[in-house]
Length: 302
Length: 187
Image (cartoon, rainbow over all chains, first blue to last red; front, side):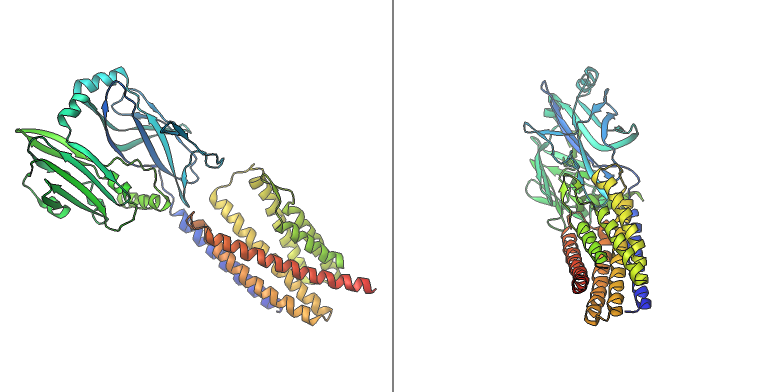
């Protein structure tokens, strides 16, 4: 090989490597998210003498963003809720011995899924308000980060009921879900008429999820039928809402969680409100699921 | 003259071997590159081959990269962003590739000067092989910035390829070293 040939080889190799690296860096720079993303929380609790409810707050940051969530001031609650960095489940503190990842964050190629834990604390003022209204709902507020920055947040909806309110208004029997399927069951002692169902939160996911409303184990309504329906739906005993991912085995729990439907029904000529939700806290999201979530957020916001 | 190739052999052996106590490599790469720098200096002054001079400059670049690695990796004194870390890795890989290509070219020319035609052909062919294989490996490695974290199998494959090519380099340096050992003993 002559010097000239060697020089040519070197230049070609160097140019290809530099162009490839530059292309990769440009592509990676487009993946950066402009702000921290919180996954949604939708859940209901009953307030009793031993109120020991916990919330798991999950949020997605760019990998270079090392901030952690320290506290949240919820609109509607008197005091800030402090964040624990380690989970306490089943009697064991969930920690990791890995120095590089002490909080067991899910670290992907672009993003990190972090979690924090709240032991819900209600002040006397909060409890008085709860008992006066029968329920207390919150979901928006201000998050304080470890570097001192504050940011407005909107999680979803968390409702605390008194026992009496829960017993009087509750229709929800129970529910369960997996990666690609979710069902929630509702039961009524007396016949009711569902007069309205807010499908707006389902609409962005309608191509990825199939919806099925089954009434009294008999009538089945799909999304396309419900969106055009104007007459009330008679429920004699029970109904079930089911979501199924169009592509099986695709982790769709984050989609189920973002679907929060307000429902209005009539019973004995009186109007009541309820809602259909899925309490998934974002933990268990793996790298592809986190990226899918970010891609969805971009489509909705950019 | 035989010390020159001995320096190159010892230098690359130190670079290749990583014996870590905690995060500290007791055989720091920077010492390896210094040996390579010394060997290349002797070779260039004895033969006048331009490739050895260029390789000498590249060995300084690699040595600087090795010093940087001590401060970022071993002692963790400097925390680099992913982009900077990636740039340093790619640039370091490119610099090492060009260093070895220049060394092989210099060895090929040196063997031609000494009328060791079969060794000249051997080193020339190995140079082309090294340039293509390591060049392709570096291009594949440059996609690592956008590879999923759980797709690490390809990195292991790249590591195996790199180890094989470096072993082959050591073998070829040893052949050149032994040639001058033989000549010295005949004298």
